[in-house]
Length: 169
Image (cartoon, rainbow, N blue to C red; front, side, top):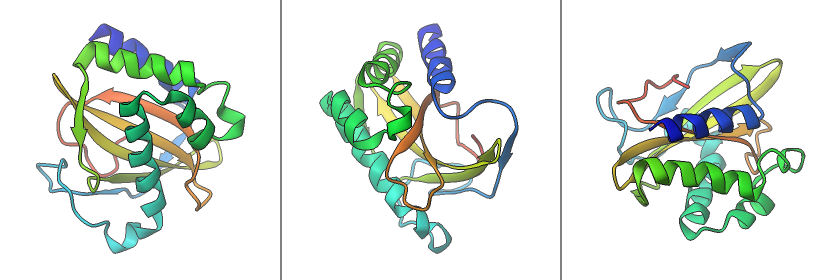
């Protein structure tokens, strides 16, 4: 588990975000108060984030296929490719797999969106719960909130410690 914490810290340090100066806005997720690992259609007020869900699911599929170069070339914003290069993404995923075992699956229509602002930059966190052999992890795909949600500026993997609150980062 220490390996996973180190990798998660690395992901945060290498991503576009930092721990200071954060403002979190109203988030929304699928599921109930006691269970967020439920598939359901995106709620009307979050439909604008549908593309972020599609990209998040696509990245998970590329991770499962081991196509880290595709992730870098297709889904990482150009100015972030050095920090989130294919070998860095592979290192992050290898740490998650070492700690929790291989990926077993995820639910395509399980979703969580948290808009946030960090140092004057609007961001969108797209959360997915990914089942590994030895438990589940929260994957957060970070987009600059450009209303297009095509390229990532960050990827964070955290241990899943229970149901995530709608605004929880």
